[in-house]
Length: 381
Image (cartoon, rainbow, N blue to C red):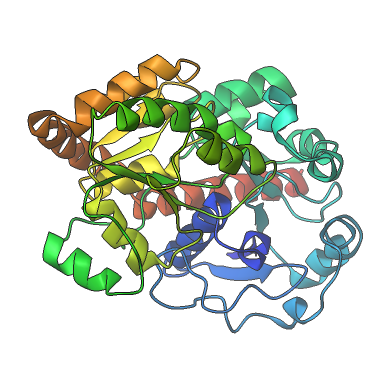
């Protein structure tokens, strides 16, 4: 089969959708189908989900031009698809061409544009929200990355439940337990990481609930309940300034460290050195940092919102994300209790092993087969 595969998420710095796209493509490429990359411009060099090589650095001539993404997808891409002779095309970030000569599969990661529109900037609302319902209705199949996301898709977009396939994401194979000495060696002298710390991984943006996290951390740190510091990893997002202002207002300048985006080998070391991942998000379609941390044996503190209870199972210390006291209590319980940390490590390793990109790729390929066969059957009528 010839499958068109949307690699536009690889054209921007690392994020969750980019990790999904890169990891899934790297597995699908070895499964027999011809994967034809589709994009409005070339991906960033050296960008894969596992941080090992670049599987998309020698792509088709389609990628040599740089076009506005919406114009390309809605006006240029349908003509390109007609020339490519594809059995199906897969769009990995919620939107797809309204008109397509081949069956389309669309992955929708979450419904936050509807559930939390206040957490998105205006251009994103204008450029994506009108097209997602159209893409979902016209798609031959929709992939949701969790059962929680499927429920939201069916309820909000009013598409048939049988059209939506739940295929979980997974941690990259790059994330696994390593010994402390190797982790510190990986950091070398280039990263001013404290000896004991809790870790947050993700974009600095309102939906991640970081101001409340800082308020909770201020309680336990200023009160002397924990000696740890708090390390943030992730690029700045929209409306990130309240987070940095909170650090100053709460007097946490000596207790909080922002590292920005870090390479995979550094992130692996940080997961393995952290005494807990703290991820009190208000909503997640999947919550990839939670599974990455668990795969490294890192204790996880998170909320039950969105997919997080589904993905975490019993392997996390759960908080009420709108309660600063709840987050503070969880920090005290986990950071001061080596036995609880060890319990969460073992539960997390077992929980993360439930998810794999190989399984996700096989399930995704089965969706390709289904929509292609259905289209072929319709043409033969």
